[in-house]
View 1 (cartoon, rainbow, N blue to C red):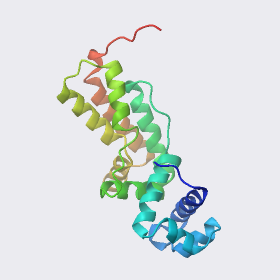
View 2: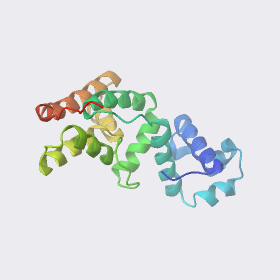
View 3: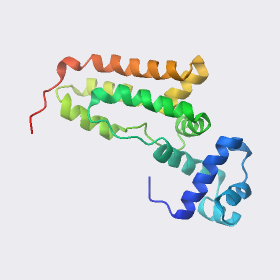
View 4: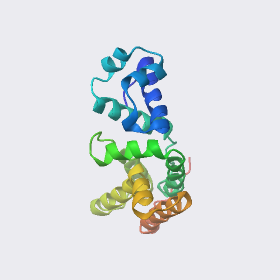
Length: 189
């Protein structure tokens, strides 16, 4: 995410607050401007269309409100996924906004912690994976580690917070179990 001005942060923060209070469809730029303490035209100047505003807000929510520390080991990922699912469940309106923009392919955002980080972890801990196995592990973990997974478990299966976290973490463990015997010991530093 690119650096935002103070005004842009105020707009996105105000819109995120209002989404939680009113839903994303019920918020006018006038109300956003009032909440952010700016003129309505300033919202339009920064985000000319409703889609621009929604995409920027979804990216801001994911980068700030749902941000988390990167895992130090690929095998720590199930715990990180469990914690992420609980964070999404604590703020469901915002999780839905992020998921909807990602699932529609509108923002091109990658699931946390991101493919590049997963690749780095695999390079360090399981470098012996062939390209097909590597791609499969990264794809599975990327999918499990997303707000889209939370929405699917919530909407399609009617699962509660604990069940969602357990299911996502268990699935990540199952993926990782298939490569545990291939771990390269770390060198002492």
